[in-house]
Image 1 (spheres, rainbow, N blue to C red):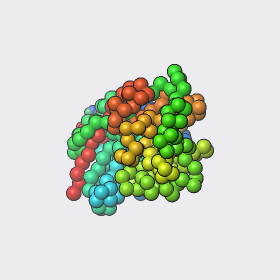
Image 2: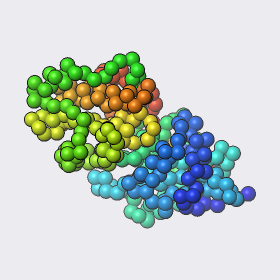
Image 3: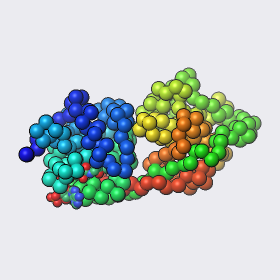
Length: 303
Ligand SMILES: CC(C)(COP(=O)(O)OP(=O)(O)OC[C@H]1O[C@@H](n2cnc3c(N)ncnc32)[C@H](O)[C@@H]1OP(=O)(O)O)[C@@H](O)C(=O)NCCC(=O)NCCS
């Protein structure tokens, strides 16, 4: 029976969940996670989310999104894609992707990417074990431009809070604490210049109780932060974190990292994920983090 392609609507959610659970063999999707990926995307738009149907059964899903004007460039993304195993290699992903690309082209997108969507992403590229997805990317005209990694930390073998170091920092007028609601404006301004794209994840971390952000203030001014649980609900997701150059090299990043790891441990996680890294040596040195997964990043210039 031939497949038809149409746009996503809310009533498709449960079937799409099962499709993703089956197709993503190296990941696990919960209802809450998929819901966050679709509906908490800051540019959620059902006009660029596609489904393939055979009769009334959903056999393909491809979620597009975009981020406009990141340093002058408009990016379009395939955030998620899945085709039922029995229906693969029949051109289903291709037909959904071609519709997405056409639509995003008309919306002035310059560059397409796969997976690595700032603010709200699932995985920061393609895990090469999803080899059909790599083949698909190449066939659709994407070029591989970088690798990135997710690290993992074993949380169970130690306590993470370093009270001695926190006291020593205090003697240098550096105060480490959990971010309070009163700190929010200052924190958002602090990240605005260097790390504007992280404001969204900090917003998410601010919604949690307790607030999933720790900060360091030098002489009363925020100079560093770390956050967790700001993306991928239900996964032990660390980040983002950043330290102003004024405070680098004093052990502040380590203390802030540890406070988030302790939070994740207290939630009940045995391991933490440090995604889309970045300074592997920092996390390896301080927390014994090891590379758990590698992701290949792909892009395609449209303009
Ligand atoms: C990746 C995926 C969505 C592709 O869906 P699909 O409908 O089978 O893809 P298409 O049939 O449209 O393939 C288009 C082209 O991609 C390439 N391709 C797709 N699957 C391939 C495979 N298994 N081996 C080699 N090339 C492949 C081919 O060039 C193909 O064109 P061709 O058949 O004319 O040669 C599907 O394999 C899938 O659901 N995989 C599991 C989930 C997944 O990997 N998601 C992405 C994680 S990052």
